[in-house]
Image 1 (cartoon, rainbow, N blue to C red):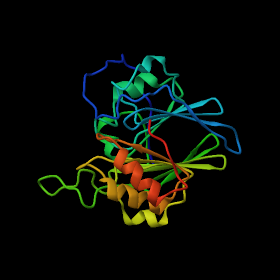
Image 2: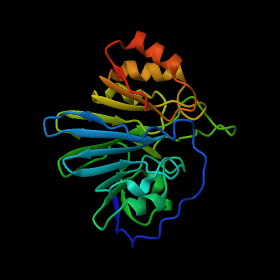
Image 3: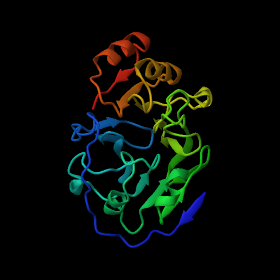
Image 4: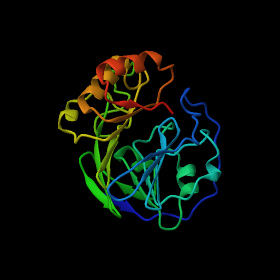
Length: 245
């Protein structure tokens, strides 16, 4: 794991961009999940930008601009970055949300773009306070660019498993169904992406959901209406609560 000292906080500048349909979510919705060590508060701010609050710790995943008023958000204790694509990664937002002791953990693909933080490669693990963190693979197998290069090459990006007390959260990052999922721990809560051609279509999404069988499932990263997906999930996973945010 590579570690570089966090530089002085720079002026935050919001750069205009257009994100997919899910980006501007009803980010005021807060879901509470009890754990053995306190409540886990979950807010989907938009796209793949999430806020977890646990025992007064504020944790963000893939913070980006243009998904709500981030000036109202509390400063971060921990920030996780899955990969360096602009709909997941913004140095200005990371620095805006950071304070002097914020810990920033990112994937290998972010190394050329960051002069601060730490970098976890696939299958590396660490802890933050009482929270266990494991980086897992996230990549394309089927969906390729016109030059046959994957949109998300193997080894560049991370998914993350986070353990809050007795509750395990899986943050998939940008991935398709991959063989490594056979060996993943079983999550209580999963955030899984759907958007063609970059990650999964509906059928692959359902395949991943059936493999993991999370009691709580958040579809994320989508740019279409989810009625059809929800109906398929009701059949495939009748005991899973699908949360659309």
